[in-house]
Image 1: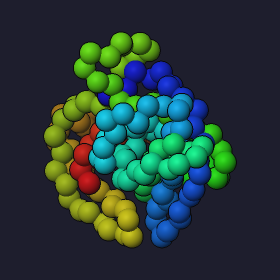
Image 2: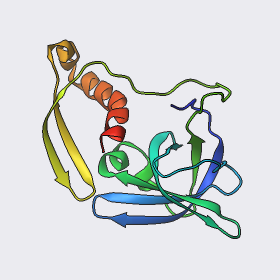
Image 3: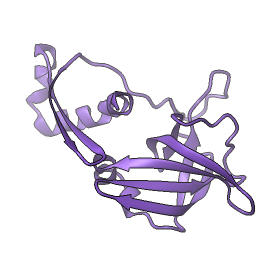
Length: 162
């Protein structure tokens, strides 16, 4: 869960593009605390919740360099695919119990339970097709709204699914 309050503006120091994905490596320096950072932790980069896949401590100006993998859907729906080395990104660590609560809570929630009908695999990505029960049918009458609602609230689902 995030508050929506940006904690720092950090520099992208390396980008590794491969088939179907992009890895961003962001220098936290002294701008954002890396205390307690673990592989698998959630960090918002430009408002997009990403998972820490690696990190390393560097001597000199970079401090801690943190790696995040971005799949095709993330690159298509955000500005993360247009970033270049040297660009600065908004960074926010996930909330911890006991932290000051400012801004607003950002989280997903469950509206219904669907059944996975098909998973189409491509390099470093998965397209998941879900059949929703009758309870979700009213949303499907407004197809663009349904897609927005599904995209908006499925980020938590996809983040925990893989």
